[in-house]
Amino acid sequence: MKKSKVINVSNVSGGVGKSTTVIELATYFGSKGYHCLVIDADMQASATDCIGDKGLPIHDKELKTLNKQIEQGNSVLKALDNCLIESVSSDLSDVMVEPEIIEEVIQKTEVHNVDLCPSSIRLCQTDKQLTDDITRSAINRLSIALDIVKEKYDYILIDNSPAQTLVSTNTLLASDLNIIPVKLDRKSLKGMILSLKNTLSVMKRNRKEIDVKILFTMVARRGRTEKLMIPWLKEQFGDMILDTLIPYQKKPAQDASLKNKQIVWTNTTLGFAYKELGEELLRVLEGVENDKAARIIQ
Image 1 (cartoon, one colour):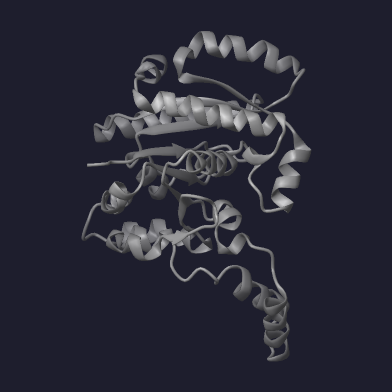
Image 2 (image 1 turned 180 degrees about the horizontal axis):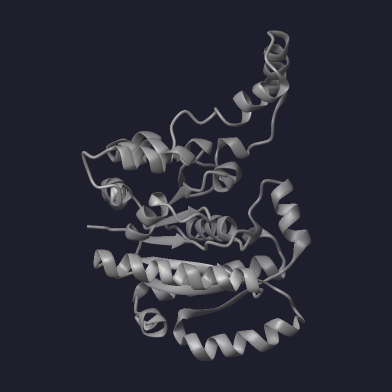
């Protein structure tokens, strides 16, 4: 019986490449013949915008609908809200309330072998809904939902918001591997420390084993900080640090975004780096082994 590996991507610091990491890995795994599910657990819905229906360019028909709504008395903001946000009828917020409906919420994408459980701004209300519902545990809803679909996928990848919430606790407890992307600046490193501590706390309280890996992103080619910090962090954290370095390249990322195309398919250093990351993780997931996080923080 096939049971998928669940990869969680999280950091309490924003702007470190969480969504990009999830999207590029899912795209690469899909191209290798693996069936993937992306779970968008970020209320900003970046992954949903990129690979879901919401990520497609606005077409003439939608512009006519916008104009019609404005003619009917709706404000411009209300019309845009109806078009851009409410186009997803069900999303992860519904799954968190009722895990059994996950198959109804999952949608196909145009990315080969990749499905999506979308997100929307409604996810900001989910913590209160989970707290108010005393009929079942608030921290294992996603685990229950994923157990229903795990036989259909080889890999499930979860994108997270920076916030530490009941939703993020759900994503951690549902995962086998937690990747923490980090830029080599003070803000991002502080986020890495908090993310490690939170992961270890969740593991300890719930007696759950989760492998932890740190991914350096947006690495400047000739950065002085990078030259100093990367060797030191590798010495201290050992095999928790992924070998692949994701370089900083502004133009390929912008071009891929504008063309609604994943970076991994660009003939650039950045594209090659995401391919290398995909291959490294496939090797890691063949035999998950890592308890160094616990030894370091204790």
